[in-house]
Image (cartoon, rainbow, N blue to C red; front, side, top):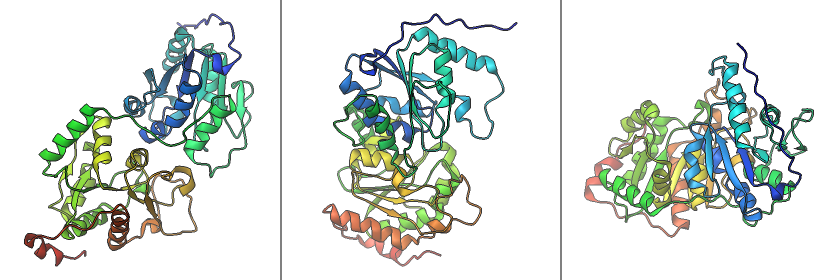
Length: 383
């Protein structure tokens, strides 16, 4: 039996600045939610009476506690973000989401997308849920699924600016365009306890290395990450490698090259992980979440930036940073897996270490004095 959802029409809101219940839609990765911060801050500062509810993926929802402008989160895996057809065919699921949104009686929906995504599917869903104001940025015609449709943003635009462009067009004013996340004293205390349990001295400089990324094409080879860690350790720097359980193979490859480097391979609250980044002297990572967190927390970073995207779209903007990438004719490819061996990341561990020590020197840190126990390790060179 088919269930028909009936939505009682609302009195349409006509002014975004008067909206009291705003739905912000970004059901993507954690880093994408982090980059919403400046736009959501602009909304909240311009319309302090508004409540912002974030519609996010299960992963993206973990970032919400770091963004104090979010009042509530709706967690949903949505079909328009499904890569590879992994979400089963089940139209009742979308019907239920429409009903859920309709019951909330939102005044407005902000649909945030990247340069390659369309806002029209979520816009139509919000229309069916009776949300009178619906805004997004688009390259293609979508009828009147959106009440405000921006066009013309160049692909090269940074994602933070793309988000801000949308809300500024609607009348919200941004006073600060930098990434920002909120950490608690409990986050910081738990991070220090974690460092101690791993044998890392929190009061001395340490370098955090993160070899993971959601796409294989964006990962600097794990064995080279291990070679970087081994060299930094041999030069007297404390190092810490981070990852999660599903990246166990990557971490094992790093450990094979750098057996003395401690590893954190467990699921931590995002606030605790962000506190590890805040307390680090330097972050070395791929184009992935730690790159955005380091930018928000003003931690210097070396990013192994693959040719999958343009640097201008996602790069750090506030903190000291060096992006390492070999120019290639296929950049940007926007692929999840590289079929030709990642020539864009053909960067030697020595180059990565040199970049790291350049940033550490600029931060006023000197290489620690080596202990005698480190001497044999210095003779060990990469294969």
